Amino acid sequence: MTDLDHLFERIAAGEIPSYRVFEDEHVFAFLDINPLSRGHTLVIPRRRCERLEDLPGEVAAALGRALPRIAAAVIGATGAPAYNVLQNNGRAAGQAIPHVHFHIIPKYPDGSGLPHHWPARTLDRDGAPELARTIAERLT
Ligand code: 5GP
Image (tube, rainbow, N blue to C red; front, side):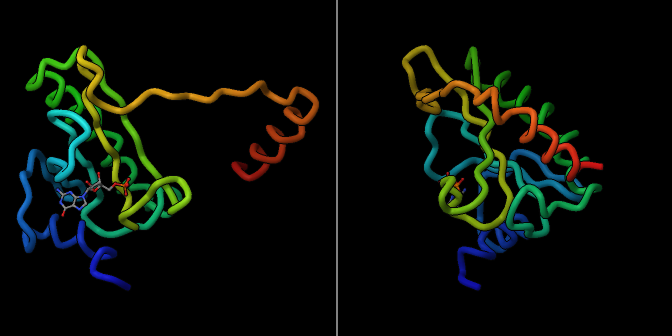
Protein backbone atom coordinates (compact mmCIF):
# COMPACT_ATOMS: atom_id res chain seq x y z
CA MET A 1 0.00 0.00 0.00
CA THR A 2 1.22 3.49 -0.80
CA ASP A 3 0.07 6.88 0.45
CA LEU A 4 -1.92 7.25 -2.77
CA ASP A 5 -3.89 4.10 -1.96
CA HIS A 6 -5.36 5.79 1.13
CA LEU A 7 -5.47 9.38 -0.13
CA PHE A 8 -9.21 9.48 -0.83
CA GLU A 9 -10.12 7.68 2.42
CA ARG A 10 -8.16 10.33 4.27
CA ILE A 11 -9.85 13.12 2.32
CA ALA A 12 -13.29 11.66 3.13
CA ALA A 13 -12.29 11.42 6.81
CA GLY A 14 -11.26 15.08 6.80
CA GLU A 15 -7.63 14.25 7.60
CA ILE A 16 -6.56 15.86 4.31
CA PRO A 17 -8.32 19.09 3.37
CA SER A 18 -10.61 19.28 0.36
CA TYR A 19 -13.37 21.46 -0.99
CA ARG A 20 -16.29 19.23 0.06
CA VAL A 21 -19.56 19.53 -1.83
CA PHE A 22 -21.55 16.55 -0.46
CA GLU A 23 -21.38 13.76 2.08
CA ASP A 24 -23.65 11.10 3.54
CA GLU A 25 -23.12 7.75 5.23
CA HIS A 26 -21.46 6.09 2.20
CA VAL A 27 -20.58 8.88 -0.22
CA PHE A 28 -18.23 11.87 -0.25
CA ALA A 29 -17.81 14.42 -3.06
CA PHE A 30 -15.22 17.16 -3.47
CA LEU A 31 -13.57 19.38 -6.06
CA ASP A 32 -10.77 17.83 -8.11
CA ILE A 33 -7.40 19.44 -7.33
CA ASN A 34 -6.44 19.51 -11.05
CA PRO A 35 -9.75 20.20 -12.76
CA LEU A 36 -10.26 19.74 -16.48
CA SER A 37 -12.84 22.52 -16.20
CA ARG A 38 -14.51 24.69 -13.58
CA GLY A 39 -16.62 22.55 -11.26
CA HIS A 40 -14.81 19.23 -11.96
CA THR A 41 -15.98 17.15 -9.02
CA LEU A 42 -15.02 13.70 -7.69
CA VAL A 43 -17.61 11.40 -6.11
CA ILE A 44 -16.26 8.53 -4.02
CA PRO A 45 -17.34 5.84 -1.58
CA ARG A 46 -16.06 6.71 1.90
CA ARG A 47 -14.49 3.28 2.31
CA ARG A 48 -11.86 2.29 -0.21
CA CYS A 49 -12.77 -0.14 -2.98
CA GLU A 50 -10.25 -0.26 -5.79
CA ARG A 51 -12.56 -0.85 -8.75
CA LEU A 52 -16.22 -0.52 -9.67
CA GLU A 53 -16.81 -4.26 -9.60
CA ASP A 54 -15.56 -4.41 -5.99
CA LEU A 55 -18.31 -2.16 -4.62
CA PRO A 56 -20.79 -3.72 -2.18
CA GLY A 57 -24.37 -3.35 -3.46
CA GLU A 58 -25.40 -0.98 -0.69
CA VAL A 59 -22.52 1.38 -1.46
CA ALA A 60 -23.14 1.16 -5.23
CA ALA A 61 -26.78 2.05 -4.60
CA ALA A 62 -25.77 5.03 -2.46
CA LEU A 63 -23.41 6.25 -5.20
CA GLY A 64 -26.15 5.76 -7.80
CA ARG A 65 -28.55 7.87 -5.74
CA ALA A 66 -26.01 10.61 -5.09
CA LEU A 67 -24.55 11.00 -8.58
CA PRO A 68 -27.58 12.58 -10.32
CA ARG A 69 -28.10 14.99 -7.42
CA ILE A 70 -24.46 16.05 -7.39
CA ALA A 71 -24.39 16.37 -11.19
CA ALA A 72 -27.48 18.59 -11.06
CA ALA A 73 -25.85 20.76 -8.39
CA VAL A 74 -22.59 21.09 -10.34
CA ILE A 75 -24.42 22.04 -13.51
CA GLY A 76 -26.75 24.39 -11.65
CA ALA A 77 -23.85 26.12 -9.90
CA THR A 78 -21.58 26.46 -12.92
CA GLY A 79 -24.11 27.03 -15.68
CA ALA A 80 -22.25 24.55 -17.88
CA PRO A 81 -24.55 23.42 -20.69
CA ALA A 82 -23.17 19.86 -20.77
CA TYR A 83 -21.01 17.47 -18.78
CA ASN A 84 -19.32 14.07 -18.82
CA VAL A 85 -19.24 11.42 -16.09
CA LEU A 86 -16.02 9.40 -16.21
CA GLN A 87 -14.92 6.50 -14.06
CA ASN A 88 -11.57 4.77 -14.72
CA ASN A 89 -10.73 1.24 -13.59
CA GLY A 90 -7.15 -0.01 -13.72
CA ARG A 91 -3.92 1.79 -14.53
CA ALA A 92 -4.21 0.98 -18.25
CA ALA A 93 -7.57 2.79 -18.26
CA GLY A 94 -6.10 5.88 -16.62
CA GLN A 95 -6.89 5.16 -12.97
CA ALA A 96 -4.22 6.95 -10.92
CA ILE A 97 -5.84 6.58 -7.48
CA PRO A 98 -6.89 3.00 -6.59
CA HIS A 99 -10.11 4.08 -4.89
CA VAL A 100 -13.31 4.15 -6.97
CA HIS A 101 -14.16 7.68 -8.06
CA PHE A 102 -16.59 9.18 -10.52
CA HIS A 103 -15.49 12.38 -12.27
CA ILE A 104 -18.26 14.88 -13.02
CA ILE A 105 -16.69 17.14 -15.64
CA PRO A 106 -18.57 20.19 -16.91
CA LYS A 107 -18.19 20.92 -20.62
CA TYR A 108 -18.19 24.58 -21.65
CA PRO A 109 -18.68 26.32 -24.97
CA ASP A 110 -14.95 27.28 -24.94
CA GLY A 111 -14.17 23.54 -25.21
CA SER A 112 -12.86 23.11 -21.66
CA GLY A 113 -13.82 19.81 -20.06
CA LEU A 114 -13.18 16.23 -21.14
CA PRO A 115 -11.64 16.07 -24.64
CA HIS A 116 -13.97 14.12 -26.88
CA HIS A 117 -11.99 11.76 -29.07
CA TRP A 118 -13.96 8.55 -29.46
CA PRO A 119 -12.17 6.15 -31.82
CA ALA A 120 -15.24 3.99 -32.44
CA ARG A 121 -14.85 0.77 -34.39
CA THR A 122 -17.39 -1.51 -36.06
CA LEU A 123 -18.98 -4.27 -34.00
CA ASP A 124 -17.72 -7.72 -34.97
CA ARG A 125 -21.12 -9.18 -35.89
CA ASP A 126 -19.71 -12.71 -36.26
CA GLY A 127 -18.35 -12.69 -32.71
CA ALA A 128 -21.10 -10.61 -31.10
CA PRO A 129 -23.67 -13.37 -30.33
CA GLU A 130 -21.06 -15.50 -28.53
CA LEU A 131 -19.63 -12.47 -26.72
CA ALA A 132 -23.06 -11.29 -25.55
CA ARG A 133 -23.96 -14.82 -24.41
CA THR A 134 -20.68 -15.19 -22.46
CA ILE A 135 -21.20 -11.88 -20.67
CA ALA A 136 -24.86 -12.66 -19.98
CA GLU A 137 -23.98 -16.05 -18.49
CA ARG A 138 -21.83 -14.33 -15.89
CA LEU A 139 -24.83 -12.24 -14.83
CA THR A 140 -27.13 -15.13 -14.03
P1 5GP B 1 -7.97 9.12 -12.05
O1 5GP B 1 -6.92 9.42 -13.06
O2 5GP B 1 -7.50 8.14 -11.00
O3 5GP B 1 -9.29 8.73 -12.65
O4 5GP B 1 -8.26 10.49 -11.32
C1 5GP B 1 -7.67 10.88 -10.12
C2 5GP B 1 -8.08 12.33 -9.88
O5 5GP B 1 -7.78 12.67 -8.53
C3 5GP B 1 -7.33 13.32 -10.77
O6 5GP B 1 -8.26 14.07 -11.55
C4 5GP B 1 -6.57 14.19 -9.78
O7 5GP B 1 -6.49 15.53 -10.16
C5 5GP B 1 -7.36 13.99 -8.49
N1 5GP B 1 -6.57 14.15 -7.27
C6 5GP B 1 -5.38 13.53 -7.02
N2 5GP B 1 -4.94 13.89 -5.81
C7 5GP B 1 -5.87 14.73 -5.27
C8 5GP B 1 -5.95 15.45 -4.02
O8 5GP B 1 -5.09 15.35 -3.15
N3 5GP B 1 -7.04 16.22 -3.84
C9 5GP B 1 -8.03 16.35 -4.77
N4 5GP B 1 -9.06 17.14 -4.49
N5 5GP B 1 -7.98 15.70 -5.96
C10 5GP B 1 -6.89 14.90 -6.21
